Each structure stands twice: as structure tokens, then as C-alpha cells.
Length: 311
Length: 311
Image (cartoon, rainbow over all chains, first blue to last red; front, side, top):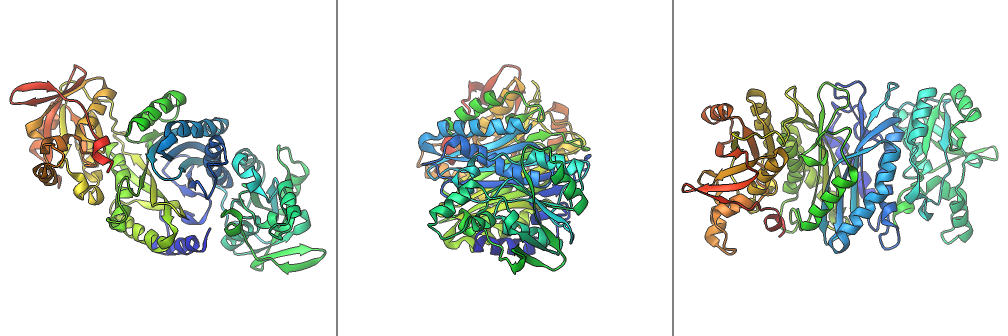
């Protein structure tokens, strides 16, 4: 999120006031909407564009189509909801519009089928500008209700799936959103809060803290680092360590969870998921974010997105 | 719809196959989704862009925001559903991003409030390209069910709200979507089919025909013509008559309805709506579209969008 986008979102939240229909409104990964059905809906939308979220001159259109749906699936996973159907708006450059639109769908549809998502509508336009893909995704909470970001409590353990950093090396285009993992964990354990890591691990942890009115300590030695982040640090063109990449790069699309200690211990000990689950710290009463390394606790400035995604 | 967009949509419908969750899928103004609630949801999405659907160098950003929501409201009105909440994705030029985004919302929000729509989420990005606004709108059918386009029967009367043609003179930026009218008519009368007129009166009537497996005769002397269409014809730069504009310009966003004769007569006789309702013809068994003028019936080639919107 750029400074302008953050300023705008603050203005909009103020302008809109409290939501009647969606109790979490603009303040979570997805909106929650009760339509008088069995379980509330969980709805999210994400727009990706050439030059910002991908580069059409370099990336495979199938991967771009995959990513356009996957980033939304990741938001629905963060609410531990079941995805149902997607609405896809395309703006394709007229020059190779038809072929490009088909290739995008050939990347998007296998992911949709994998998670039982139906493409139920959309809007396809050609224009003279760059490629733009917007997906709106509708899911439904399970009987356990949606997993929100504002339920973390002091003493909760900070758990994450997968590893972090260096996503722009390729992971951001072919990642598998943690839909299955979120549904399984939410069904089998008590989870207090969750988000997906889109803007940077430290920044997204700080968002759970801000929403929940608490703080968190990240034990930096425990943070699982993606090999691509290690390679970036070795290359050292930007002077960042592998850990710094892991804490701030973003687009990891892993789950970040706040879990009561006994459930956290059981989750980590008996992990039957296909993806690693790691305890990387805990939530504390004092608001703020810290890193704990070599027995020393220091303030950690949450960072992400701005230097993580703008290319 | 350009030829490429039509070809792509045909490919996509084939590629996706029949829908499990939405019985009307890509073939109506909006998708219908049963989520186990009281009434099914009605969901639509529309993307508008600078240079195609508006011109930022000339049009007021508030009107652009209004239009972005209104085109979606018109689709939900075409299904005679109640709009509930909107998800707004913005791509704003970085140069004047914050101010522009705020102005867009200041045009969109009064319309949302008027129809009880909550902006429940969205995605705001800045970039170096032109302004793009995507809205996904979720509504809910009434107890009478969604109004579909595939229910017209021979003998049904062809009714329309408002007037047609010359929308680009300004109507397309400040129209009021026919949400109230659709809900009132659907509650009080039997309606067999309906669409909103977005791509041109003759083209949109032909879509009801194609979906319903019937034809229609338009009595051209009865078609209500917008004064802007008369002015366009007087200007005569393109050689089109006012009627031709009314039949093909598009972006009228009026309701086009197929109504059994007795209900149609009652609707027109006792119209208590704030907008005129006019009978302009009837549906017939033989597939195809005709115009009836001076007692003479001739084939009418459906046309719209391509010369109506591309500027």
C-alpha cells in the first residue's frame, strides 16, 4: 500500500462510517455479509495490473490468470471460508486481445476447479492500455464462522504456514493459496485470529495486533526463509539480509495465525498438512511489534509493500 | 460488445460448460447464486475505463463514480432484485490519485445511499495508466424470484421505461437506474422476462428473443425518443435518423420487459411510477426481429454497442 492508498483508505473508512451489513467492513481481508442464509458470505476483490503486480513482457499469461484468482483465494482462506464463485473483469490490450484473454483463463480455470470455484460472471473489454485483471470472489464461512483478524489475545502463539521473502522471484505467480490448510485448521483447532501475508510478514502481523489491541514478539531465528530470499541477500544489491526480505517482502500469501498455546502446540506437533507450520513468536499485551534474537528484545518497525512490490 | 469480445464470450461459455451454482450463468444481466439463504443472490460486475466509457478530460469525476455504480445497479434492476452491497476496485493515475479517488466516491456514495447499497470492500491502486473503475454488486432476489431474460412468450407485450437514443449527450453519466421501478412492477404484476438496455434497444430486445426462443415486432412509431437523439439527427453528421439512434445507441439503461397482455394493459393504464412506461410492440412465435411502421412489417437488423459506445 502506498502512502496515497493508505491515506485514501483512512479517508474512506471515515467517510463510510460503521457498516451495518458487514461487521468487519473494510478492516479485514474480506467483507462478511449475512444474507439470511445458513452461514455468512465472505467477499473480496483484488485488481492486478501490468507493471505493478506482474509484467506481461516477461510473465506467462497463464500465471497472471492464476495469480489474479489466487490472491483472492488467499483472502478467503484468511477468513477460513469456502470459496464459491468468481467474477472476472478483464481489460485486455486490443492488439492480441482474444488470445491473451484465453490464455489468462487457461491459467485461472485449473485453480478454480481445484478449489471448487465457479466462474459465474465477468466483464471483458479491449482497450489501448495495459492488461488489467479484477477478480471478485464470493465464499461462505463454515459453521465455525469467519476467522477474523481482531481476535488475537496476549499469550496466543504466532504460527505461520510455509516460508517468507523473495516472492518476486516467482512464488508470487504460482503460489497455491492456503484454502485447504485454513479450513482444516479452523475445523480442528481453536484459532483466535488470522490474515494472509500479502504486504510483508512484519506489516501483516502488526495488522493483527492493531485490530486486536495487542502486540507481538517475533523470534527472528524461527522465521522460515524462502531460498529465493537467501539468494537475494547473497546478491546483496539492496543491502538487505535474508531475514529482512522475509520480514518485509510481501506477496508470500501464507497464513499468519494467532492460536491459543495448547492448540498451537498440538498443531505444530501433529501437523498433517502438506505445508510446514512454524511457531515464530507470540502475542503480548503491550501494543507494538518486537523482534527477539539472542535473548534480546528490540522494537521491530513493521514494513512491507512499498519496497516489496513496486517494481 | 466488439467482435473480439463476442468471440471471447462464446469461447468462454463453451469452455466453462453449464453452471452448477448459477442456473443463468453468463447468459443474463447478472449471475444468480443460491447460497442456502432465503432468496438467491444476484451478482454482477462491470468495469469502466477512461476513453471508452467516459472521458476524464471532459467528464466530472463525480459523474464517473455515479456511472460506475449505476451500470451495475441497472443490471441488478434487470433481474428485479434488491441491491445490497458493492465492492469497488479503482486504478487511479498517480498524479492526482487521492483527490480523484475521493471525487469518484463523492459521486458514487449518494447513489449507493439512495438505494441502500453498502460499499463493503474494494481495492484502490495507483498507477501510471488511465482511470479504471470496477464495481462488483451483490443483490438479492425478492420472494418472486429473479426476473430472467429467457421467459418471454409469444403474445407478451414489449414494454419499456423512459426513452431511448443519444445517451452519450449526458444521460449515460447521470441516469438513475430503474431499481425501484423493477421491484415495484415485479411485485405487482406478472413479468415474463426483462433486461436493461445497455447496448442498444434493438440489440437488447433481440437478446430476450434469443434467450426465450421467440421473436419480436417493434412498432417504431411508439418508440419513445430522447430529445438528445432528435438533436443528433438534426445535426445529421452521421446520417442517422432519431429513430435509428433510439434503436441502436445504447447506454439508455432503461428496462425492457416482456409482459402478458392483461398485465401489460394494466401497467400502462395505471402507471404510478415516476417514469413513463410505453408499449412498443410484442413478442411473436417466429424467431427474429421486425419493425412495424405504416402497417408494413420489415426485418430489423439488431444493432448497438459498436457504433453506439466506441468513441
